[in-house]
Length: 385
Image (cartoon, rainbow, N blue to C red; front, side, top):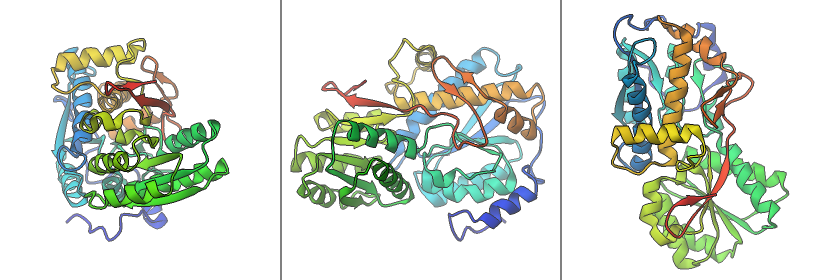
């Protein structure tokens, strides 16, 4: 039977125990099937409050793998991505992952989504030793040190918070309020933001939380507006973002709002309409329309070939990049990949340039990319630099 998770937090004893037992699971096959496709599995929100984010990420990865498979795959073998919708729900995500682990044909877990979900998954991931590639969270709480089968690519929420706070400090903004989601993701963002503000000798003049169902978004917006901030740092995602921003615009129309990349789904911006105009958002991949960058041109070509109905977005590009990095690590593993070989090959990647976006895996660092840039939402609802 799968273990019961009493706590989502990782204990030092459990991590060290898993490492001592060996990074590869005894009950999982060490080698991929020698003849069929390389099978990888993904639990992600395709529905629920963050469904739009998950769909964009998944479609970006699918487009990358489709383009790769059309050219013969990796060493002549296709990469097959199986996806299961968890609706941004911890119990469903755990059930998905347990099912994936019971299927002995799955080589790795890929691009699973959400801080609460990943926190819950990690004990089993560490216990089994299966490669856990590019989880979608910027939280430091889900980036355990010394665990060789977990590979984080995206810059952390701390990296993004530092960029946002540094920008505000540089332009002389001092009266800063913070709104964050009342879950592990939001608390991580809040902590990172506080640390960045302390570094720049700033203090929040007001702090408000918003529940996952956004039932108190209007109250939070009112509380924030009454403090008369010069800027608001927004640590929200999905529906809470939409409801909080709309309520904030009703309270004070021109109030400057600064958010992290997870807020910036194309569907979120579209739903906000004019209320999104002027928002500043940190991004951890380049603009998906910046065709000067080779990686963006490749992404656009794969996206068009995949005939995806949605517009290309930062999140779709992130999924595409994650898939490209996975495929390169797999290529370097050789014709008959083992999990142990894949893990070693990934850590050996010290400077992989995909065409303007570089990753470097180093066990001293918690993420392979430090790319962060600030964007703004234009009147036309598009991101600009």
